Length: 198
Image (cartoon, rainbow, N blue to C red; front, side, top):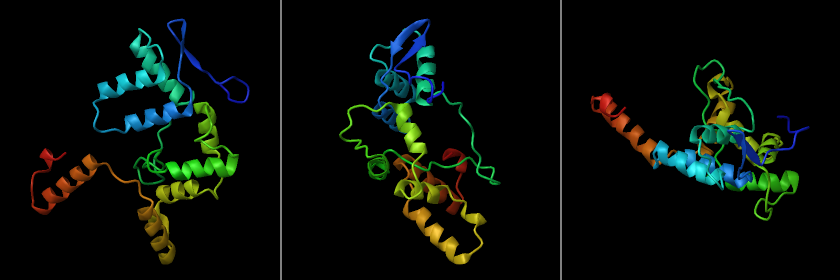
């Protein structure tokens, strides 16, 4: 699928039958937020995701999930990204929940699109525009701060500045994650057993 020459899909083929898929960008944003919800089990997430994307849920649930993920990924292969030289996978650099105002403003500024007023914008088009946001948009600067490897910066003032920016624009951790980190710290400080925490 090539967004330059092919029409973006509004349905998916499951078992030789076309099923309409909710293709508006809001659906995929809700899906992403749903996947980050730690209060739901994996099974609950899958059920809610199928209900989000399909007006009529297909019988073949495995293929329905596969096609839903294909659609969400905009027909792009999933590439694992490792931070340069760190061996660690990259952390989240944007959040539709916490960066909503920056993303909204960037679309209004760069494309003249008011995401509040627009009735429909295909997810694949939204994603293409998101990837192409210019560096002078605040959300792009913030993503740059979050993804920056501070350990590679030699200049002391620059290092302090980017450390401050990274901390300022850090995506808040979920309550469960914060509690787990606190439990780990407490276990380490008190010489406790980490196996119960991890």
